[in-house]
Image 1 (cartoon, rainbow, N blue to C red):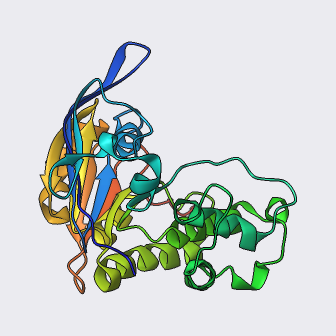
Image 2 (image 1 turned 180 degrees about the horizontal axis):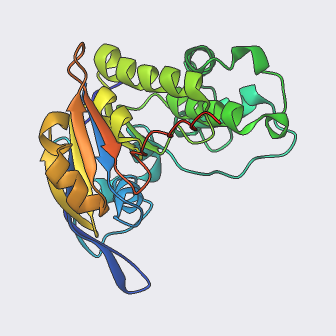
Length: 276
């Protein structure tokens, strides 16, 4: 059973080799809600997510869970039972079966010598079923396509049974079908299992579809946060991305739809040749 967990980052200053890349970073992930981080390349989205996962130590600020206890004070095992991250890239083990890779997600529940994990088999089977990789359970992961491997790594995260799920550009390598299915699964995890989800997305329309809250970053700072309709506006997006972005709303669902406007976005109709 997944324990509900909240995760909060406040006043975070994050840097690489002495250069600050995020200043005053703030985000709150709540059970049953999906929070999407959006913004141009280099705005600090992935760095902020990594700080929440304890993979990037802040120069200043705090990362806390639930009652205000610092996430940095938890043991690695205790933290891994509450928070998991699907990173942009992971090393692909050679000759290891899909089932065994998904089983890596059970590491917080096993002892040093791989002691018994009573709920492990069921958690692994459920994670593979949810991500559609059950039929490839016996295949070596180094024989999979990029999209198949991405789903296996997501299954590994789900097998970890955490209350907070962090996803860094999870639709990378996936075709349209699996992009839709993955985002629907993320929505189900929040709605049906009360998981707190933080996800970095480049596709603004996907963020509008899936998220309860959107955090927009620009040049390492949070410049807007709130419901998708409040944040994904022409003014805010055009300012953040440095290109005019038109925003409309789907006439049926009311969902936000965005359209970057470049020099060739609206071409003049081709003029028919005059009859000879």
